[in-house]
Every structure is written in structure tokens, then in C-alpha cells.
Image (cartoon, rainbow, N blue to C red; front, side, top):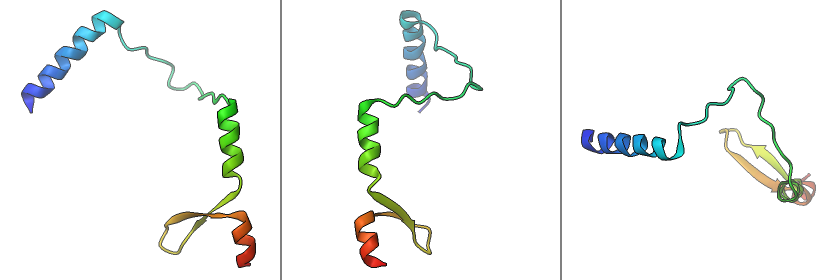
Length: 71
């Protein structure tokens, strides 16, 4: 395992000279989420589901229309 790790470290060290060091961003800065058309379409699709949790803590999704039939 030591040889594989040393080989990996050598490769990443060489790549650092080609691509430059890793960019270090401000870890305290808030994450900015950009809502594009694909994400809006996905949110619309998921809005038709309700997430339920059973007594053992398992999560599952039920279509809203099917949930209305059960109640």
C-alpha cells in the first residue's frame, strides 16, 4: 500500500506544476445555489411527492395523489 500511496502523491505533485496549486476558497462564505431551468424542472417534478418516515426511520416517497387516496 505504501508504494501505491507514494505513486499517487508523486502524480499529484507533478499535476500541481502543470495546473497550479489547488484553489483555496473562503470556507466561511455561504454557498450560493444557482437555480437554472433544469433545477426548476426537477423541483417541479419532485413537488408531486411527499417524503414519509416509518417507525424504524426508513424514508420513502409517496405521490401526493396516492396519499390523498389513503386518507
